[in-house]
Image (cartoon, rainbow, N blue to C red; front, side):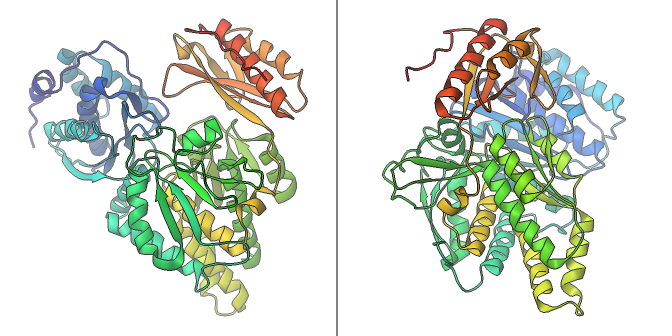
Length: 548
């Protein structure tokens, strides 16, 4: 197959020209910015996906068009590697460079990559494309497809899907159906079958009721949950809210987690009713409820991790197999959750930098690796050794019925989990399964431990890259002296902890603070934000603490 690489530049100039000098960087979740800057980036990511597929000997690469929890005006794109993981880190810089070179240098850059990686242009390249529900996603998806076709790749456009669904589809195709059927229907059927098997014939148990209110963030999660709810039939009663408004506007998992208050449509919810919120592309999930005093109560990714890990730990002990279970967190994990996991559950905890790729990589070191960010993004990974041991236990006729039944539950649990990436729908169904098994309502779940009050702030800066960190982002390296200032502030407050890190998606520095009480937490957060503003090139108004 001969390629006319001159068509790369011709197509770029005529159809997808670079219209901005704004530098656009491939961050922790790909490219994200105002959609008006992204047409040329999408075309070029189509080109890169083809090269990546050929470099990976013709395996399918995924391209997902989404800005996840960002406002509606934003969009983004990220590449999915063959095993469902994020794009290899070494290629992130390649993606950034390719997105920013002038049109007349694009062909030369592609030729350089072909030569540098010894890419065989005769290898069939296959690329799966998916998008979220933003009004500008279809035109951006077309730009991706144009890039794929320009380099003679074969695109398969799945249209509107959740981000986790695209990851799932890529893995299914590359494992030749071993992981599941590479179709939307295959995804729904696999999860629904596993959920029904675990639920059994009793749909309610103890304080667990099957009614749940679902905040769809006015995004793709609402659309796909509607289909899933139909598949689940009467096993669970899901009422979907926030399904056709402005995506992520005063709703969705990120809003609920960061603002720590009820999303739109949930202000008058009945106390005690179980509520769950996903984000715009349905890869994050958090739970919440209104308590007897009418106050908002959040159950975030930390609490999801502890709930799921304790359930799996109990099942593994019942089966009596020697498997290494571990939980992976980031610096955003509430200190109280870490204490509970170590002291009460006695499960090892690892801390890694923010970003799914770091969590996922670390989780692979365990037989059962459970990773969740506090924002609700996470999943559980089972090693081949773990899967084999569990299957052998189930098939061992010499074991008693109780052990084999526990092994059967573990096998169904594995099928309910989307191991490729954090999946809000899959994770929600897993949480529902555990709560049902324990007979718990959200109050009982929340009672496992008491969170330390915490607060997240954003500090607008001219250049977020001036802030660098170490120790899993818990210590600031530059600007010089900033960490010493933070340490000094933290020492003023009992159980105080705070850190700053550059955002991976926007020009802000993120501030996290926690302390023994709400007032101290508020003071610490704003004091750290102020010193960060002064020392890291803050722009706009200096952070000001609201009056207590």
